[in-house]
Length: 106
Image (cartoon, rainbow, N blue to C red; front, top):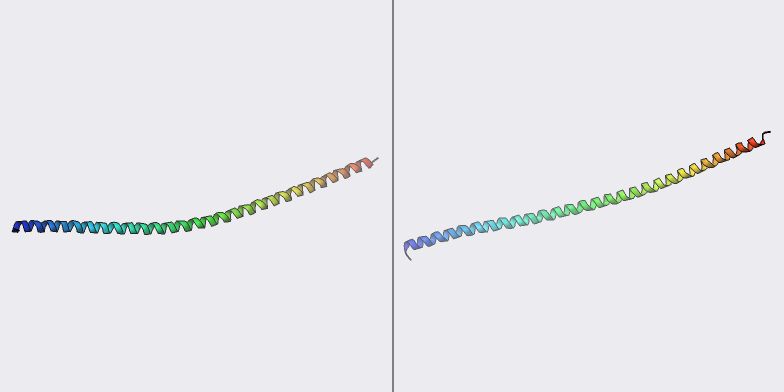
């Protein structure tokens, strides 16, 4: 092999070596990026799951509070209706008594 051919071959090998190094570094960076993205996605998924569970607990508490408030309101309505009925009966009794007194007067 002549000196110029050997020099050209060495030059080609050096260029190929630089390309392979660049390709290897690029592949390594790509693998690191994918691994980092996978780790970040996993952590984000855990956070989202925890937040969802916390919100579900809050929703359940709100449902219970709403049901208790509904029951309290129904009880208050029932008591109010009973009081109104008692007042109406009392007034009717008073009117009856007044009517009876009016009839007894000469």
